[in-house]
Structure formats: C-alpha cells, structure tokens
Image (cartoon, rainbow, N blue to C red; front, side, top):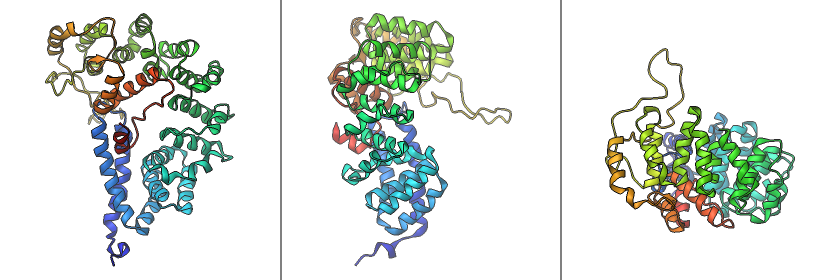
Length: 415
C-alpha cells in the first residue's frame, strides 16, 4: 500500500509551503490589479492550489513545515497553515494558527482569506465559535468569514453593528451592505453622525447599497469632495447611484483642484457618462495622468488599449529607481496600465462617438444594465468587475454583493 509519509521529499514539500505563501501575496495584490481578470485570477489560484495539494498529500510532514513557517508571522504563511488546519478538522492545529494571529494581528488577512478559500463544509462549527467569542477581535474574524462567503450571520450581525468595539462595528456595518440586509437600513442611518469616521463611512456605504438615496448618499459625497481616505470606495458606490447632474457637480469639485485631479479622472470612468471622454483624451496628453485616463476611457468605451494597439511608448516612470540617491520605495500605482496614444484614441473616438448617447450610462462600451454587468463580471478586469458588482447591487438592494475577490473556481461556478 502507498504510504505518503515514506514518499515525502522534504525539500520539495518545503518549496510547496514557500510557494503557496508567496503566491498568496501575489494574489492579494492581483484581486485589485488593473490587468487581472477572472481567468487570470483562477489560473493563479490553480497554482496556489497545486502547492497546497503538495502539502496535503504529504500528510503530517506538510503540516509540520507550515507550523514551523508560522513563526515567521506573515500573512501568506498563516494562509497556508490555516488551509491545512481547517481541511484537516484539527482543533489543535486551528488553535495554533489562531494563537499566531493573536500574537501578530497584522496577519489576520491571511486567515480570513483561508476562510474564504475552503469549502463551506470545512467551516462547520468553526465560525460559530468565533461569533460567540468574548473577544471582539475574533467576533470580527467570524463576521468577516461569513461575509466573504456571503452567509448571513443573522443575530450576530445585528448585535455587532452596535458593538462597543469600533473595529468590529465598522466591519459589521460593511457586511450589512455586502449581504443586502435591507431590514437593517434604519440601524445604518442612525450611525451616519457617529464621531468615528469609519463608522460613519461604512454605515453610509452600506445604506446606499441597500437603497438609501438621502442622508447616506450625501455622507458619501462629503467624503468624495474632501478627498478623504474613503474617497475611492465612496465614488464606487455614490457615482452610479447619483443622477447625471449631481455626478458632474461632484466631479467638478475634484477637477478644480490639481491635488484631486487624479480622483476626478478615476471618477469619470466610474460615472459611465460619455460626456467625459473628450476630456479624458486631453488628460492622456499629460504624462502624469495618461495611464489612469486611459483606464477610465477603457472602462467607459469598452476598449482594450493594449490588445487594440492604442498604446504609446511615451510616459514617465514613477516608483523606485536604481539611483543611489533615490529614497523612494513606493511602486508606481499605474505600473500595470498601458500608456495610451492620445492621437490613436482620438481617432477611435471620432469614428465611434455616434454610438454613445448622452443620456445613457455605459460600462465597458454598452449600457450599464444587468446583462452587461453580468458579462463584465465574467470577462472584465478586476477593477471593472468591482464596478459591475456595485451597479448590480444598487439595482437589486436585497441581493448580496458579488465577491470579486473570492476563489476563482468558486466565482466561476457562481457565474
């Protein structure tokens, strides 16, 4: 009989553990990357799963390696160990992962990602234990685990949105919108004036998703116009919910300030209004804004700049360089975007502008209706897919917000 333990080659299993952790880090960035779509994400997930398979079939040795790697206290290592612990149904192993996360709370995303990765039947009995924990940190993990699977924690969520722990409360308020809990809209609106900015924002964010178009929407507009840390997520929900004139008024505030011009460019793409296309083409002539303007144009018009040979060799490079006096270590936020050729783009627009109507909102070249949003969820890039899922939720407040960061294979099954 085949004995996995005797067939283990230690350095190969060590490599499986290292690669699973490393690829998770790549995935953590890929879920919001401009050049990743669902197929790309699924392929990356297959690579991760292949390394996890290597750990699975190696039995106790695979777990031993993951346990030792937990001492690094990094999110990728927590992810790999948590997968094995949950699938192995070992309470001792799960508690060991929990101990590490409690010692290094910054690794919690790896644990939550593992909750989202495994099949629901592997979570039976585990999440409930978190939801009834006396520690608000673990209750928050429990709410997150439910939310990532779009499973309603019912009374536990209803209690958590008023919890004294503000971090738990903020995450729970966000979950209300993700889960389409329209019955909790009044509870959300009660918290729009809370002194904590996270509570105010997530209460407003979810309230708009579940149907409010009054005070909650105005709260999001204040975040946008102030260019707060919540400006982008506020735009992603508020702009598709606003009428055309209100969108123009809001984006003008950003356009008039050079410090917020980038956000105005991003917002014009989210708005779906073709009136901004000539302006976006003008912004493509400014090196600093060219790439992000190209992405907004693509989101509006349904054009793949790279595939359709509408790129240019121009541009300026941002981020770290090899110069010894350069202290910058931040990567260029637009590194993975194509640099558009404004002359070619303008020619395309002149040839195609009659296909766009001023009173219609567009998503990747077609009216932003349910059919097009569903197509984008299957075929669009990750950033565009998120815009599509928000639009769908705004049209159907009682429906859950589709999880575009979930396991690629699971997403494809749902679609």
